[in-house]
Length: 138
Image 1: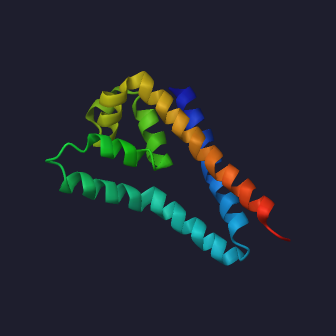
Image 2: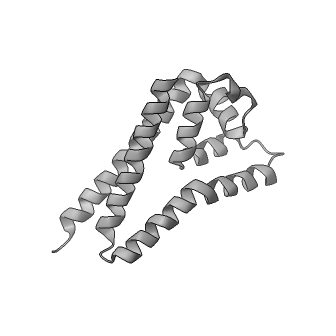
């Protein structure tokens, strides 16, 4: 369990560092770049979970498990949280997104998919930042 905590911490740090690098490459103005960083962090940390919760509440009578799974993979903080929760027995009493991960993907598949998505979330912004940096004129 501590290995997954350390792995998740390293990957989340890498993800947000990569996103910061990408935003730093995209914006020359430091104030605008800092504002975009704060908006992205707020969106990922707070607003996305709220929107997902409203979606799950509004459409609770429909089978939306796969949609919730796909939407959960769009948020690296949720992926890390679910990765850690799948390691414990408390995941049985947690929310719909953790239950979907546990039921559809199974615990081992869920761990592999979670780690793979966190790695993709790390490498994606880094490759984009490199691409934009190479095209930038100084």
